[in-house]
Amino acid sequence: MTIYAALLRGINVGGKNRILMSDLKSLFEHMGLSEVQTYIQSGNVLFKSEEEEEPLREKIEGEIEKAFGFSVAVVLRTAAELEEICRSCPFSNEEISEAEASSQVECLYVSLLIHAPSKEKVERLDVYKNESDEFRIIGRDVFLLFHNSIRNSKLANKLHILDAPATVRNWKTINKLSLLAKAMGV
Image (cartoon, rainbow, N blue to C red; front, side, top):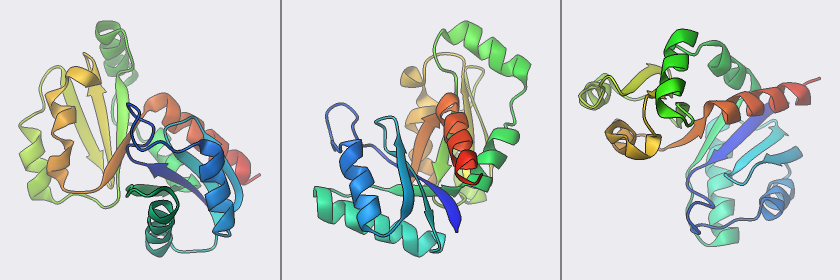
């Protein structure tokens, strides 16, 4: 069985697309997924399944739309992929510390894409990189470092240029999901 994290895009944000985590957990269990657990209200669900990623992702998206009445993009990562994301952060501790000192808020994020962006799309996004907003892409993951708030970032508002459904999580959430997923494999 594969341990997955399903990361839902844009739920429970600003009062829109409200889903109770208990309802989401019940839906996943009803779909036959095992050892289901949720983490915080932003739509993070850990579970085990024997299904392959793409059909499973489509199935989850379809069931969410049927159950809750709105469409939500779902990004899946395996426990191994989450662990690799945590291991392969392309920003140095010094770069992160500098950003933390200047931003006074969360500064490191990962945008998790359903598929890797094309080289042309990355080049289009590259023009929004500056001394305050940096990004580096590894496969399907965009590592984002903000020296000011993500809320004031032109780069963050232009991630759609990559033309891949995605959802963003802060570094603490990514690390916690990785730890929870790893514990499921013990």
